[in-house]
Structure formats: C-alpha cells, structure tokens
Image (cartoon, rainbow, N blue to C red; front, side):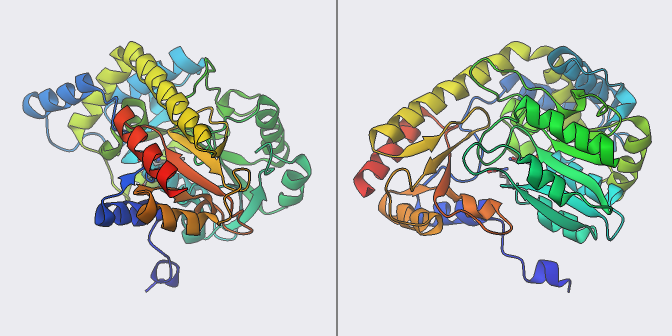
Length: 380
Ligand code: PMP
Ligand code: GLN
C-alpha cells in the first residue's frame, strides 16, 4: 500500500457531508448549490442520450464541446483558443491530476499557495513533485512578493494557482497576476491555473485569466468545470486548455486516467456554453443575492466575514467575531448545537494553519439559509 493514501484522512468535504447526513444538519459545508441549476442543459443531455451515440467519444473530447469551450472563452475572456488546445476531462479534478502527472518530473519543485484546494498537495506528492508552499498574506489574501521570490529555486518547474480562490472567494489582484506572470517568464515555469469559479464572480467584476498576462499564453494550463458554470456539480465534466505542445502531453496523461467522459454530458455542455449566456448571468446574480442575504444574516448575529467576491462561499472570522473557539471545535459544535455543517479553513492549509476561519456555502434556498441563521443565532 502506498503510505500517502494509507495514512491520508478522508477529504473534509466528504467527511462534513457525511456528518451532516448522519445528524440531519443543514449542509453548508461541501460546495454544491440548491439552485439555480440549468434545466436546458439537463434536457439536452436527456435528448442526447436517446438520440445520439452512447459510445466512446474521441479521447480529447467531442469537437462540438472543444469548439464551444473555445468560443465561450473568446466571448467572455477575450482568449483566442483553438479547439485543439482544449482537452475535455472528467471534472476539473481529473484535469488537475492529469496536468500534474503530465508536467511533473519526480524531484521537480511545485509552488502552491495557501490556503490551497485540498486536492493539490496529495496530487503533487503522488506525481513525485516537491511542494513549496507560499502563504498568502493573512489580511489582504494577496501574494507577498518576497515570499514568492524566496520559494522559487533552480528546481522550480510549476506553479498551481487557484483564481477565483476556494475557500475564501477572493479574486486575484491584477498586480499579483502580473507578478506571477513575471516570475513564470523569468524562471521558465508553467502555471496550472484552476479557474473553475470563473463564471461566479460578483459585483459586476469580470474574471481575467492568468493566461491573458504577457508571456502566459504559451505557459498556462487553464482549467475549467461545467459543474460550476451550470450548477451541476455531480456531472464532473471539465477541461484543460493549453498551447498545442503542452495540450498534447496533457492528453497523454488523460488517456490513461479516464480516456474520455460521457458523450451526452459533453453534447449538453456544448449546447449550454453556446446558448446559455443569459442564464449564466442570471445565476450569477442569484448567487450574489444569496451571498448578500446570508452575510447580512451572519452580521446581524455578530459573526464577522471576509468579503466574498466570487464562488459559493463566505468565510466567517471567529476571532473578529469574538468567538473563543478554534475552527475545528466551532464546526464540531455547530453541527450539534445549530444543526449546521461548515468547513474549517485549516483543512485548506498544509502547514501553519490559522484556526479562526470557517467557510460556509451560501448557494442555498433562502429558507435553508434562514434556518441555518436561526440555528446559529440560537447556538451562539
Ligand atoms: N478546483 C476547485 C478550486 C474547486 O473548488 C473544485 C470543486 N469545487 C474543483 C477543482 C473540482 O471541480 P470538479 O467537480 O469539476 O472536479
Ligand atoms: N470543491 C467543492 C468544495 O469546495 C467540493 C468538491 C468535493 O467534494 N470533492 O466544497
């Protein structure tokens, strides 16, 4: 048995969802929405199952979907991707795994930024990479230039960057993107940029990809997920985009992970990307309204939050709220006392974790959010 897996705990998302199921708590832990979910895309998948092929699609994805991804990024992010620069995967998780397996030579150093999405570190380690962790500043959640410089050495080959960022829901500052781009160009690094939350950016802001920075077009692997764009997280359909010499290598890793993904989902997502821009804008506005509703409720019961600019998540600052508990104890306590499941932010740290931050998912019906707020108000 590989000790990495033997000694590894179950992911916090599964662990907290299991606790919520066992206790009947409202699950504001794992990030999945009650709604809005896109009915047109679901109908297209049903139609495709009945009317189109149910056999293996091409290994790198249906041409219709690769065209649709390229078209969507051209319209929304002014990117000029060709269809052969898109490799379809079974969720962004597979894309992250494939990219790390394909690009890491054992012994390579890989920069990760804390807080970090929980899949990154084990996948880097499994691929034989050596993680160098860069802490984001714990007030501004920005990159400390000195910390970045200190982490880059002669064996650094890759950076993994998540923008918008799960768990905190922050969007990268343009100066930080420029800083990363300069570092990548100067040290000849490839950036794996996990942008699964790109369609859920609020307050009129627009996502800008690291790939748009000078020098980054040919050294970025941009990862996306249909689950987030259409509110269908169980679909596990994603993609990775990169210039052809990199995309060809990514495809080699993908071919022996999953080889391909269900064709009806690919057709449906292609149709959705081509026709559902108005729905995507409405969904974004609804999530923003849920965020505002939930944050106002948290503030009213004395819980302070870190501003959430994107994603399904808002983070409560226990220290600023004068709650004398650490994040793990707080999450454990509120499952019982408030009937609410949440995620301790320390789960997103590989080392030196802060213990005063807790993530809540606000992508729920108003009544569910209100019930959670009522439970928290009673418990506090
Ligand atoms: N990366 C980040 C930052 C995520 O938040 C998630 C899921 N919430 C994923 C990757 C995984 O996406 P998928 O479900 O498409 O595998
Ligand atoms: N990314 C989702 C979250 O942050 C969870 C995905 C998963 O459960 N693997 O909640």
